[in-house]
Length: 111
Image 1 (tube, rainbow, N blue to C red):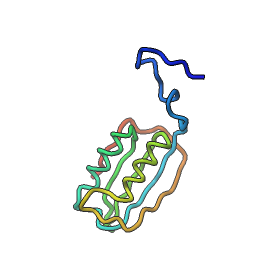
Image 2: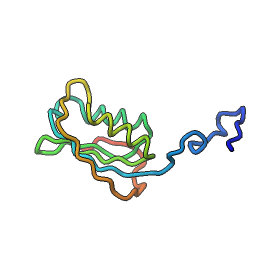
Image 3: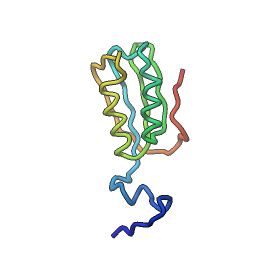
Image 4: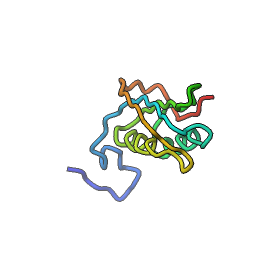
């Protein structure tokens, strides 16, 4: 049973989110995903969901993304990666789940 308090600061993520499992996802995005602000928009979306990690362009035209965070939040970023920003055309998203490490403090764009 969750006891509600009048002070919002007393709430924790556990109180309102049944998915408190942290995960790591390594993603490769294929399509027209470079030159369309995919990396910057991924950073904005990931940060907005409290997800850490990084994003970078690969020489073969794909975008590589590494995400860590709560399962539901990482899932939201992955869902966004299937569409990307307005000028992107995503043809495929390859996802590999790895062991969560907690090594990142923020989400960054790697150049």
